[in-house]
Length: 508
Image 1 (tube, rainbow, N blue to C red):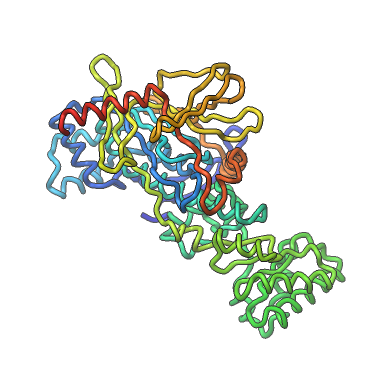
Image 2 (cartoon, rainbow, N blue to C red; image 1 turned 30 degrees about the horizontal axis):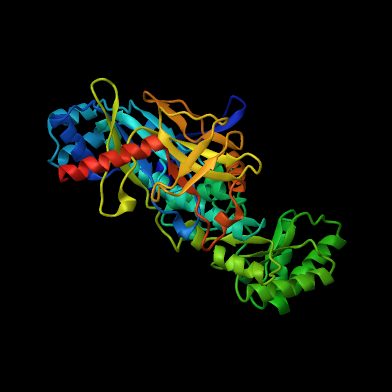
């Protein structure tokens, strides 16, 4: 599957005062694991295919050993669910496999998603073990969507989280996403760039991402531009004449301090003498000792009368290298980050899972289900759940998340007892009036119809920055971050323990 085949005949039109992308997308229904379909056929033939169930998509560990993750990918999940249908060519292919019976294939011809979906909005800070997406639907439908939901949410949440870490390391400097040529394919490059912007990047070099999602596109020029001219000065001068309002010159093609920076200063001086406004200008470093070179270049630019010239840097950057360069006093204020961001090179997978949480009985009640494992972190939280986020009222900082059953409600005026579900004797009492509650999940689909509108990407980015501001610095630090507690309500905890005891007593 490639972006260039997913998007055809792209155009824009105004709808309710805003521009929306009108995209003819490839059907992604068969973007699933085979066992989802074989299980569907099993449900179709040997079980009540309309039995309503609840599945939770969640993850168990923050990426990059960090203190949080950023939710991303919901917009594509919505589009996937909207377009979920088996075309005749899909039916023909499945028939050719020789494992699906005719009556099941006939059923697939009219298949549509008819359930409900709840989700944590894109750009939201989130933590392990809490549902990112909750699917309530007939079991055949809920089973089919597992693979695509995990594929989309896992990748985009990973890149958004990595971007947030990189932006944190830059301490307010702008981060540009430059990873398209190193991404694992067009989809990863385009949706990854979108996720990176959600996580905090100010723009991307990916023009397709800019077109599809209305995010800023940015870039300078390559070494080949310099090398194609008879000399470096002519290359710089020509570029400056073409793009005087965004003139960032790559200065390390030959000799950064002896040639590149002096030639850039010469061009900037000529522009100023010619009365050309120097609105956004500067240099880019792409090799060498970035700390030393940037400090020396800053001295040279300042001495020449260009104290506001930008010094941008690239060259296999990540959050750890940027953090180190900041500690060293590097005079860099703009960063282009590519490979290590778009691939999350040090942590290339997110690890989200999709587990059955409840089955509805004949009376319409959800019977909680639990997955038991010898690894305690793999034991699931059962039942129909929701999440409350708890903030300290005086600071606005995030205190904890509370997972509870959907029939539980809390009042901010009441005292609230929190406890660690792994070590329940560890308790914290919050007095009424000292905390603020916020329900975390949004209703996205109701009876198969979308009831949620995805914000624009730059609005999601702004929301994400506010979300990150609710975290203590100790949680955002790159190494050994403070853990934000995800607690269970007493009722949910008791339900979990009861099911574990029942499973233990049954010998299962």
